[in-house]
Length: 315
Image (cartoon, rainbow, N blue to C red; front, side, top):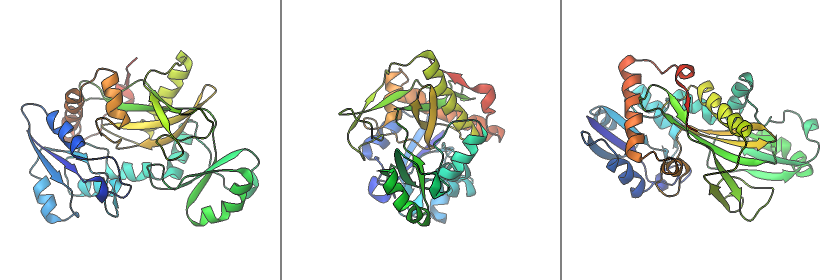
């Protein structure tokens, strides 16, 4: 089996994602012993790169964009050229990148989401968050009081930014990965993102102050089930394959979906998904085996897995 690992260094990606030689080497070492692996650095999408990638049975897609091309653009280009890549389809990634579309779709599936403000009169009191309708890595996000939110509302609309109530609650992230046979999905237990020092206003990552990860958060059965159900349903509703990571805010017992990461970062020490795999005793070699098995299932049968039939949860 011939497998390519396609990546672009952080400095070449639109949002400067965490990807370096450690990320690529970790995935390369995790390839099956029977596989012939090749590391390929992304260049501008062109016919020569298509010819090169077409020689491989599968492409492990670690390309989070290239200059002005987003990760969704790259996935869409791979699809258009019939490259068998082990990440969600470009169309699905483009849709998941649009936060307003995600809000609408998840609402149809009865999943709680922060509701974007449509009219200035809807801004009453409390805190509000503005964010680009498209984009990632928590960039361009501002958290303000109601007065400032009203003042900036028209400008945010002009700049295609969404204004939503800021939810005060605990934040969690759930990884969805292929099951052992690659025929469906299972979830890894939620990790909690905790502000340090303790405070009300925070986001995952460090863009609004320091946070830390708790891989064994204290949750009731109801809270845990609600978080996992919301994340699995979001994954299914957006038609995602292979793996994703979904971020939620827990307010009372209700899990509000904040963001759906169609290609969560795979840095071995800095990223959440590898941390969750390690915590829950799933080695990187096992993870790679699973995404390859799912690739064989999808591309050999020319159909996506029937997600509802195969969902499995790891306790």
